Image (cartoon, rainbow, N blue to C red):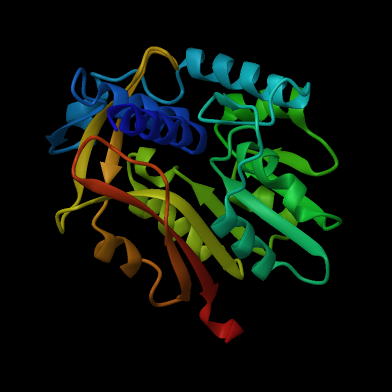
Length: 275
């Protein structure tokens, strides 16, 4: 009986390790050792001097290496620079993108999309669709992206305006980006003002309490050494940004977890005048 329970426990651990992102697995392992998300800060300025930030060179280099591993066939896809060796589709994201597509054409702006992580993870699900995937990123990512990772499908852009002109998007997608911006509300308003027919968000972090919380995130050294500010939003306040111009078509829970009282969700919006 004990052996059966042990085997079942081992099977569960192996299953979770397979389906959960490495950052989540590391979070669970370390929750009683060293916290990854900590603090409840009053302002970004109070925290930023303690952090290396997302623009740190080590993150760029790790992202380059992991993307090269995917493109060379040594891995199926990467996420947060961690490599995956089997297909693991993000079905809510795929369903939303296909809902936004038209007549076999899918054009996407990926705001904060690194070197195309989400595209590479899910590309085989798009079949024979004609896909354009325009990534808006920091300047140093755009420079490297254009030099090494551009293709007939993927392009890199310094700002939303140039991306929209180039891609003519049906949907603006963003995954785990807004919570790492100093003024996320201003960026959300910029995204909304673009007037793209659909907006798809994934892996947005929310505080379990009905208020916004600013934390310091310490990335496990097994991934890379970095610390950066991270918001956990109030879900009600977050959704108010969209209510005047967009209808919420559906929402879904993301697999991400944090070692504070919180949760992660995704949302699929359609512009109101589209009916």
